[in-house]
Length: 602
Ligand code: GTP
Ligand code: SPV
Ligand code: MN
Image (cartoon, rainbow, N blue to C red; front, side, top):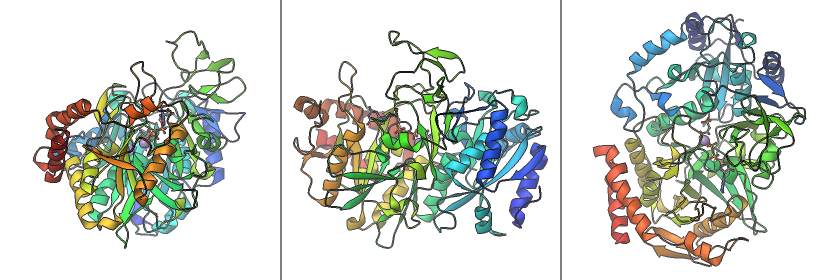
């Protein structure tokens, strides 16, 4: 196929990669529905995709057991200097890594088609958007990119013959086989051959051996977070692992909230929340990534660079997240959930019992056995749906506005069964940066190689996604605060929906009831909230947040009190274990915040 572009650099790169990977043919993707349908047909014929009778134009995929999530220990920031990757990233010398990967890429697309996927993160042609071109030998990647990014000929038009793009190379790493030859087996390489590599100085991404999510859809975590964070630091803006929502009070006054929670800690759910408080409205702008730039008025303006949701399936129900359920009613790709006999999907926490005999995510027959608490789940804990953002009934009118939305509040959060209260507010920008820098959360199934359940520090929910030295990232945030006039600064909050009782039950009902916390956040931004000063920051008074049904006054007191002993242990851990990782690069402002909170706790 001749290249549908006169962009010499792009054509030369595609040539070079084709010589190395030796595909049977090359297809330039145009982003049309016909193209999408033809890719789906290839995968259905090859036994890789199952059409879902109950959901129009929707398909189920089952991946390989080694390929169900991001793999953090196979993800690399290959900057020239190790110090630029910093203490929290995996680093290899870029030329050494390229040598290793070139050997793997050599001939790796034999028997397959090489797809060239031009995509835009952010509305096509908008000054805030970034263009990437992904080369991939996976039809699953092509169709998923159609949903998650803006793909096709229009992007090439904007690129012209000399526009800038981020080259993103991807292979599933299973050479000598076509999609048909995969015999219905999800193609990928074994774990020790998987590499998710970033070359920040060249702004290039090389991914090998995985076909799943953030490892393979390179516009998302690789470009829009790891590479974009490097660009953002240089240019004075922020690329963050944050949802963006619009909240409107009964009087029609709106505010915009961004929130950074680690993977599988509730961003999609909060972004699509249906408030339980009458008269309040929440609308979705983004559920995973925010690019925030200071506007002329000094405020941070945020856009969602994505075009779809790649959301966690388990736990999603008409009760917990009806907007997500409506979003996945059609045109959706499901991966690693269970299949029902009548051609629908099912997963743990979907809100009703499994109807009859299912096929689980491993492809085996599975019947629900409620008496057996140890029964293996039908769906992988990190099973996901990919659905177009336009299908969300709560999508905000502003969601594609290239100007972005002015952010009033930034929330941090994580899964913390104890110590961290339901909500507290930072006293200042730097206190907010301190809060972000110490985020801790129980590890979830969103990464394959980590021990689920143990608490780890995940600063700004960016631990797996910051493309440079995390200490420099903290400094970048501090400096941005210095440049932002006080009146334009967002307020910073820390939330925790995941407190548990001694018996292991949730202390807070979460989901739609989180609107009560959002209401207090709104009021604090407006100066009308009821709050008290505490050693850890501002907190709601006992009557500052209305009690949801089922939460006793005693529970609420526990949710809204400062556990001084717990906090002393928390802060001692920051001083002894967390902050020392960053050495001399740790900004002095954060040390000052640490000393101040130690003093306030007594
Ligand atoms: P990524 O896509 O990995 O970045 O995840 P996310 O941060 O968007 O998390 P998501 O909203 O998909 O939620 C992950 C899991 O947490 C799901 O199983 C949800 O049902 C559950 N969850 C979300 N919000 C709440 C909440 O308020 N309370 C409780 N108990 N669980 C929640
Ligand atoms: C995450 O892990 O934060 C995700 C899923 O959003 S993935 O796209 O696979 O990174
Ligand atoms: Mn995420």
